[in-house]
Image (cartoon, rainbow, N blue to C red; front, side, top):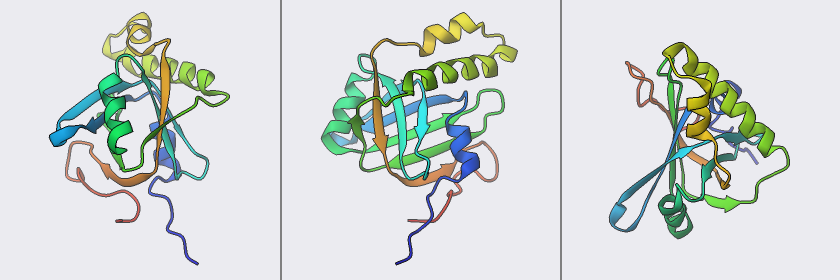
Length: 162
């Protein structure tokens, strides 16, 4: 039995877990959009699952949509270069935090602050933006993935077309 390779390759997995800006979207009744800031990401070793982290309070409308229909779109963008990737899933669900996630979130905050520092942002500003005491994890299987970096390749699919 042949299994399709994961949509996310190793370089993209590293990018998603680096100091990038994360916007996590969902949709509610009538396809009404909802959005929350991601505060970290974990990609499974086999690259077939992506877990994003959000503030439970700030992302309450998004989490309600995910509970209702499992639809998710996550956009990862590096502010210093505008390199951007979008990943969509259809099976998003809340999952417990795993061992090591708090350390992962701290590494993310430091990496994000380092990327923003040359743009004039102080680390304390970035820490205030992406630090939250009520972090929850949302896991999903990438069903679609796209390059969204501005330019001629924007909209190009990553991995296999599914």
